[in-house]
Amino acid sequence: MLSSRPNEGLPMHPAAKLQLARIADEFARWRAIAEAERPPAPAWWWGPAFEMRNATEPLPAALSRRFRLPDGASFAEASAALRQTLAGQAIPSWPYDFSRLIASTDSDVRDLPVQPSDDSAFPP
Image (cartoon, rainbow, N blue to C red; front, side, top):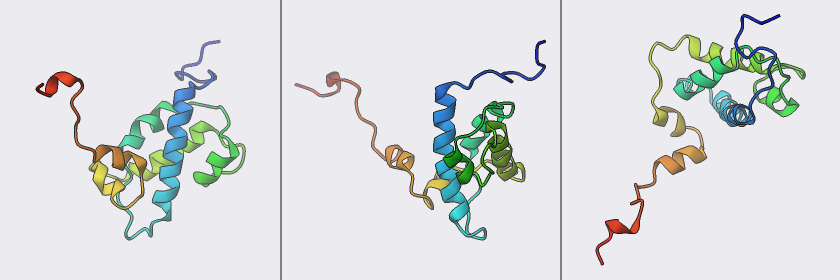
């Protein structure tokens, strides 16, 4: 019988799991900030949160803890936790609203100046 929910019951792609692990780290650091000082949840969590909403595969225990979920929780439950943080936001956050308060390797990369792609940019 075919499911009416896309991707339900299919194994998750390794890239989706890797992306969720990255978000889990950010989520834990975000939750560690006092609520009054916490920036809005980052808008880049939306896509993965919706992509995983039907993923029934169990989360690794370490990820469950970062999302404050019980052992044996599914990727779909992690998706629900992310969507709850984003649900009340009327305006998506800017990347620097999040990364200026949370140490993130991604923000280090975004701050690098653009480099030419080949040697033709430099005169002989």
